[in-house]
Image 1 (tube, rainbow, N blue to C red):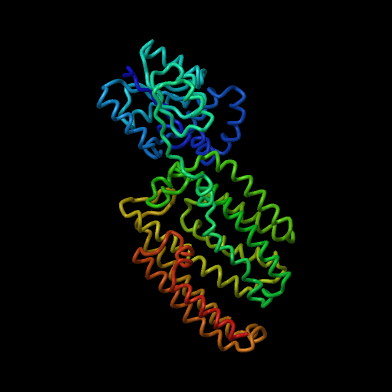
Image 2 (cartoon, helix red, strand yellow):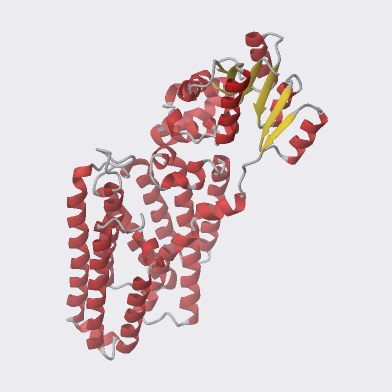
Amino acid sequence: MSDYLVCDLDNCLIKTDALYEQWLSLLKRKPLFFLLSFLWLFKGKAYFKHQLANHTAFHPQLIPYREDVLQIIKAYRTDQKGQVILASASPQVWVEAVANHIGLFDQSIGSTEHKNLKGSQKLLALREVIGSKTFTYIGDHIADLNLWQHSSEIVAVNPSRILTTKIQALQKPTQIIQDKKTPWKLLLKQIRPHQWVKNALVFLPALAGHKLLVPEVFFKSLLAFAGFSLSASFVYVLNDLLDLPSDRNHHTKKKRPFASGNLPIKWGVFLLPLLLLGTSIFAFLLPLPFAGWIATYLILNIAYSFYFKQSVIVDIIILSMMYTLRIFAGSAAASVPVSEWLLSFSTLFFFSLACVKRYTEIIRSKNKITIDGRGYRQIDYPMVQSLGVGSGLISILIILLYLQGGEVRALYKNPQSLWYATPILLFWVSRIWLLTNRDEIHDDPVVFAVKDKVSWICLLILGIVFGLSI
């Protein structure tokens, strides 16, 4: 029986790395200080961590904890009635915050401005507290071997094969905790390929211009689809990295790979440049204007993530613009001009869908006056609903006005048949808002539509109407 149970923090007690999380928080909250933080590194890790702790707010209640480790700590306190110490290379203020929040620790040991408690330094700091008494150590990193060599028992969290071999060579009582999930499946989930269906909008200019079946046009549109899909995934990864606190406070977003702690944050940091590189390659293969629209999309998304996400109404307008940008990009990639009618329709139609997304978030936060990470209040939901329903109906009015013009007669042999598309669109928009009002819509209406049989039937009918018209 050990006199003490000592537990590490990062990737051990918690399912994430506090250093990465707070660095990302600095990037979002104080971008200038984030740039300055690279200079802090020249003064050593201890100084870097100290400055990071001074410039960021740490929220232990929003961190995913490892339940298996918590159970070991609770059992130790109950059965052996020994003291428990939280010892980490993270700044002392973070370690204390976690210890106070959990309420199971007797003491906490963390890094200071002048000393980074990693490996042997942590062992020295621990010995200053417990002297020569025995301890069981819960760790996860190869640097923890310094402590395991002097511990009486070993608890290793998700050790690598190399680390496992080194632990076995110590020939001490050992407990292994393995709860790591397959990273490749998590990465696939993180880049959200199911969301790529939105990027099919790049085919719309070619389809509306009756040139989709031209091999060269179709191939360029396909390249545009691939490029936009990678850029969209870049945005999803960036947003999830920057929105960790608010996502963890959300009823469904807390299950996302980064927010849940199942996918290490450093994977996202490495994934971002790879997705950007892939986007650049596809942009290079297409006409220069396409690269301009891709760049506009990325810049607008970054501005949205940093500044406009909490701006009421502005955020909805930007979300709707993301859809219309795909149409512009498809037009530039395939060198097919896009109709002003199509742009007018898409602007209002996608504004309506963006309102669905925001309205859903508001009504699902019934017990909160304000919405986490947003500028909306509970009382705003009737206005958002009115804006969404109104813009959706006006978008169908634009279709009706388009049918009265001479342009439609030049493009279609049977333009009268296009009229049948309006009741289908009217039904779909009305139904979406009816289901939204009942809180039966997924957070993203496009994802809902992809899984919705009625939406697919409507799309099939629209395809038939379009075929009869030409």
